[in-house]
Image (cartoon, rainbow, N blue to C red):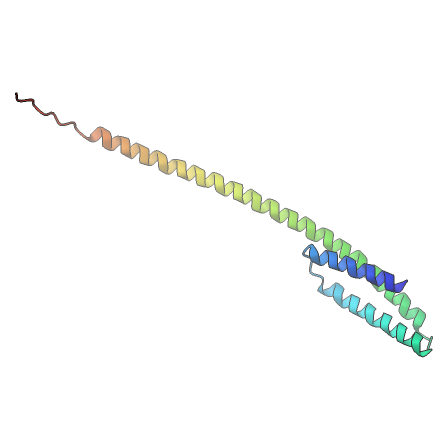
Amino acid sequence: MANIDLGQAFNAVLDAEKAGANVTELLSKLNTAGDLLAGAQNALNSGNSANITSNLENVRLIANQVNVDAVNLRNVSLVNSQNFHWLILTFSVMGAVVFVFFLLVVWRRFKRGSIRKLLETKPEVVENTL
């Protein structure tokens, strides 16, 4: 049963890592639980059953806590990622609006200047000498 709990905790940590969470601390706890499980397995193989039950119970406790922490980290990471995407989208739209506004201002000034230059030019009258 401890082996199954440890496997579920590992999968939860893997999912949290795929979501972008920092799982360094959880991996350390998983390694500790794995060492305890290996120690219990070695004790069982050698016939020394003194600490097997306590080691297996510790493995299950650590694995369950890691599983809960990994699910929480995954959820927080997904929410942060979604917020970051909305922030990027918002700033992109705002940047596009500001760019179009300045483009219109420059175009109006250029248009005004061109019209002023056109109005300032005097047409030349050419006499027809026939």
